[in-house]
Length: 402
Image 1: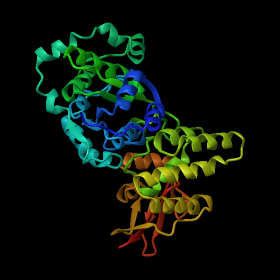
Image 2 (image 1 turned 45 degrees about the vertical axis):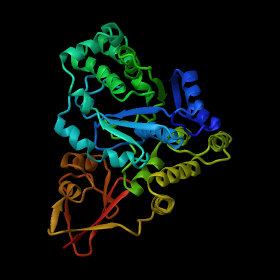
Image 3 (image 1 turned 60 degrees about the horizontal axis):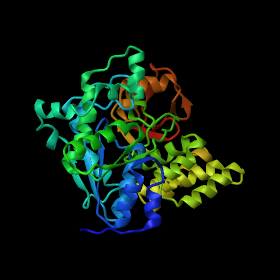
Image 4 (image 1 turned 45 degrees about the horizontal axis):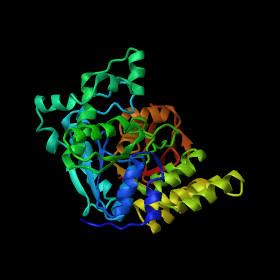
């Protein structure tokens, strides 16, 4: 039997840091302390092109276990992503096309590699086994669950009470995620607290297939920069592939009451140090802004490096604390003498679309040479000297005639 590193203190931290619930904790702890090499599963559906820090909470837990020598099995849900998980939704999630799912997952392996050692990670798309199933197999899987169990879930029950539609497609999702565990013979599955029903479905199906049932470790969900649950649907995410200064700035913009939670879930700073920081902020001996600067530096360092993190910190302080314009501003040449502000924002990638550009202007989120522009019909002259276009607090482009 393959052996792993047995570090009781480290194992106990893995089983407690950022963890909401473990089924069965004593069984899992015993296996980890035995030195047995476990197959540890985590699945991610490609519902957007970006993995964000909310997803990274589980990935960091996988990395902790990978460092002890366990076999990490990362599954990208190219089939479950089409069906759509309703676990965290208060309305029906639209069914995605395979084309959108394939486009979304294009860089998932690269993004996961920011945290995991992909050379040691077993990597799968769940289409490998799910697309081989027919009605007979799906019927057998469905027979292990009752409709009452599905509709007893809090968000499903709420939707029924509100008279909202629940499609039969949504009922299939837990079966699919559960069968993933059967297909790769998982010893442990890691997921968010919103995944509880789906995670337990894996245990039920493994029991049906006479496999040893997986243990389940549920990590806490984290809020996004607006205080709501981090979700691509709400555009409140901090993404693993965010550019350096954007990542740093987003962290600095989030509510102070999330600082400690982010330190616990999104970094690997020692717990004792985090506790001291929490006490310091409560006693007003530690300024939350300083704690947040340390947090932003720590997180950026994880996805870039220490030198780049320090550069981002300096950029933030100079730009926003001292109200300075950054020295290095990207320049872009346009071969026009004038252009509408909406078209300009889309042209220089300060907005992803003209609709977004209009909203930004109407909300007062755009400046030209330091002056707020709120008129969507505003025409901007493009000169050889150039104009400084600013979106929000952190994004700048100098537009030059060329």
